[in-house]
Image (tube, rainbow, N blue to C red; front, top):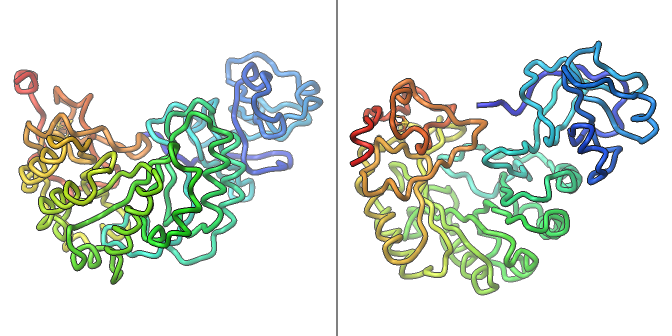
Length: 394
Ligand code: SF4
């Protein structure tokens, strides 16, 4: 697990906080404007010609220590954890706070654009509790960030908060991604409620064929879903939003988070999706991430996955078996019935993915999702145990 933030020292005045970090050879190819690039100087690398770099207009040098700086160029150096930033990454530098944050990590199993902390729902298990402060400044930063991403990305997440609260900023973000990232699919996590208004669904037309809308739905009936998201009327808005998007040709993933408040309707939810939304491209059943509101509400949410495993296997297999692609996220293999293993994915972003001490001897660790870094004794299933080689082969 590699963190996304580290301490750093900045010398010289940076013109912009966002920088693409590149080795000199890649920087000189000119794919990214020089004034947005921090040239990476590895500890054992050749000397850099500071005068030439300055004349070319590079923004900065990223180097190991103060002694590796280049005359006349701003430098980001003395990182608390030098492994946090690598060539290809996009970083935000806060000289006053002495902090570097990685906004894009080349080669990571998942990268996302975090678009807002605001949300119009209050889900009981939200891992990223919303805040009502105006953070519309993020939109401008995101537009800049998109232009610094690797153009060969297969997939890019968009998350929050609720992305539709960006208003016209969301269609514009989609358009900019289409231009800067011509082969990338956007995977946008939204509660879908705003798309109940046809005008809002119309506005994201540029996402057709380029966006998968990942929409959580927590039940087959309004009262249960509305209770989980803590908003009356949310179920009807989300279901109407899903249909409005589908009518306009969009790809949709439906997400179901498994916990004590959703479990009683999980199998009926699967039937509901099959009967009412057979057009969805994917259904994801997800284990809890023990963060944010989920931690606060642990006693109302916790069910040992070992206990819901058989029902989860039935619900997921019923959809998969009837032609709707289905996955299970965030549930370790050792607590799942064997029939569900083919549907289980390594779903946890690598920067927050850990394994239990028991996993050290496990024969299926390489294909198991493991755990969120925030899990602890209160969230540990009594079913966690290493799978032996002979068991894995059965
Ligand atoms: S022991 Fe660890 S690696 Fe093995 S299945 Fe369980 S959680 Fe996964």
